[in-house]
Length: 556
Image (cartoon, rainbow, N blue to C red; front, side):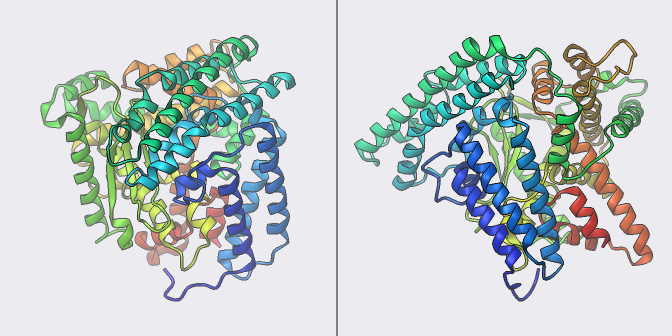
């Protein structure tokens, strides 16, 4: 990092003003990045709110394009902010907000998930919590209004997503479910004023009722008129692909590469299966490893302790060898999530690191045992050298980067591509020498390669690899079942995710491809002078960016 803070430029001012505007318009984003001024409220999820966001994006695009860069830092900011704002505007003009409903990342989940990050240590924290809870009904009413406008415009989500999300939100609406559990400790605490406890109870009741109304709307109004096709088509898919990658790729070439990469990883995994157990198939090797008690953990707390110890060891060892890890980033918290969806995810630190970066594991109901051979690479993906290092290093770089660059910028292709790159890097560095752990890494890489093929195949309705007609949802599920070794409920959820969130899933593996291509190109240019540690430092010091911006910056 710079020893002397870099003076703020005009472009920095525009970027930080945009960050402030986003936090004002979408307070849940502020919560995510540790900006607490909007923690007691929601933004406007109605069509008027979407229009206001698009108008603000247009204003900021004009400002950033007119500003004059003073150095390379400015040039990166200008290019990447302009790219992001254009995508936001294009998505709004395409009416995506009118059909923004899927099983993982849409307002239906966002409105609930924000509570996972809200502090609950003090009376003031609980007061803020109660105020936001009281806003759930209005937030969901605004969202419902937006979906209704989509109905009028003929811009609707696929009926599969409507049914799946209706099931999800009915779970949110259950008495004794998330909202009641979230406030149970506070409501039963004599340390909080009676009025605040009543507000929390009323807020939870109102939130449950609001989600029940949303479920009825989805079932009774939207589902009968929703679309039958899961595919979004080439034009809209290309827009989402650019959104998630921050780069434009040839979708047909990427599909063919995905098929080749899937075959290569499958062959690698099959060879390793025979090393684990002579003559074994992949399925037989999985069955063998699942019976192996030396790679087994029992209980969620044992899982959390193992995650923490593994993450801490990676920080300590890699910080001495292949990475410059800033002191604030050396702390990561491993957590068992309050939900039971089965997701594993990372949330970044707050701006001042008072809330550290956290790795979350959402343990499904009834799951009591965990296989470390399958999950070791996940800890590296979410922790160090994966998301925690990548995001934490950007946050800590305040001497050089503006707040937008440190806290909000970036794409799935950059972040998730880096995390997959980190998995393979740990193999190269000897951290996956245990054949079982390497087998688990390949299992994840195979799934990510399969997603490239599936996602592009379904949404572009390309011919199936077996030649028996175009891709369909049913074939996608069968294809995924043949390429992953996971619980079938998880596989079904994953396929539904891809069907409803076009372009996001391939960003992982395609992002990894671009990261590896960039490393190889920089190494070829620099020859004997190439330093892997220096490459990592230069790349991560940029913060989150689109992959085209990353390429330009590293090859300039």
